[in-house]
Length: 124
Image (cartoon, rainbow, N blue to C red; front, side):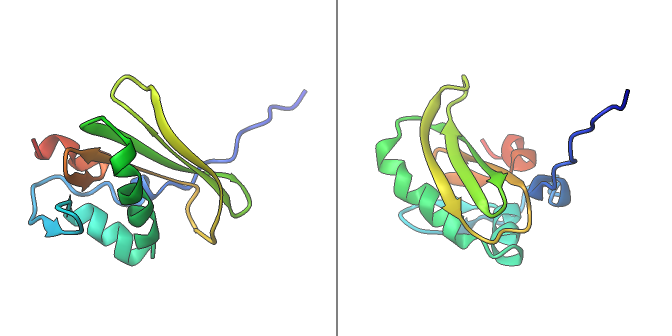
């Protein structure tokens, strides 16, 4: 009998887990601000397009705290979905095809701030 192990996920959040103190906030668009962690991920991993999609979805959402999940489904196909604090699905986009190195990325929107989960408690 052999034990089948799941492939270890390659997460952006594992690489960018070192943001443990408040930093300068960066102006984005439409009154939204970005933390240093989000700016670094966006620049280094070339995923500003993801922030644009999240911003486009904001008029449809009625939740001050949003948990955004970008996850590889298979190959270069990803699913982006957002849940509220209680885990209720608010919106989703399937079949996003993009050559993205990582398997997943989690980020939060808190009112008008986009941040990494590790940064979320530093900003009220």
